Amino acid sequence: MNLYKKIDYSKMLLETMRAYHSVNAAGQLSYMYKFALCCLYPLQQPFDNFDAWRKRILLIANCKWQIGQLTNVLNMLYDPILERISISQAETVGIFVPNIDEDESSYFAPNIDEGESEIMVPNIDDAVISSNTVTFHVPALIYTNTALLSQLIADIEMIKLKGILYTIVSI
Image 1 (spheres, rainbow, N blue to C red):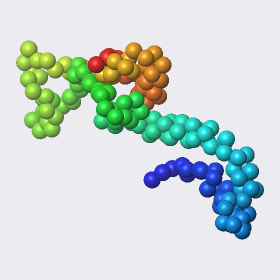
Image 2: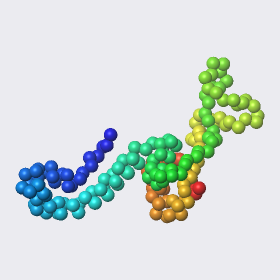
Image 3: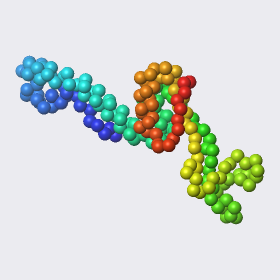
């Protein structure tokens, strides 16, 4: 479903003037229609640029911080043909698992009681339960172009959640 109506000034003018004023007796376009179209047609390009801008902003505004959706949106905006932008996320360094010692616990935490466990169980009142870094892998063409890279950073900043750390690396 397209949220925005596509405006074409030539068709809009034809609908406004109707056939009585836009076509002459010989079946050709009238001078009045041609003149009005010459006056209105320079407005078509700025409106098309505005239309592309608002669709881009709507796409960014509706994007959630999910790796699949974010990858698709960034590929659509910056690398639509080859789709080389990818996202990787580091493992979480901490998880919170309540009621682990009860017999009827429904939480899965392997080797939590052993001394060599890689799982850290922080206190419930810790400020940060997990922290991870998201890495964006972008093509070298985007990474070396400062204008594209700054636009990419601005788009990621509009989408990202507060407190998420990310890095951008070249492929």
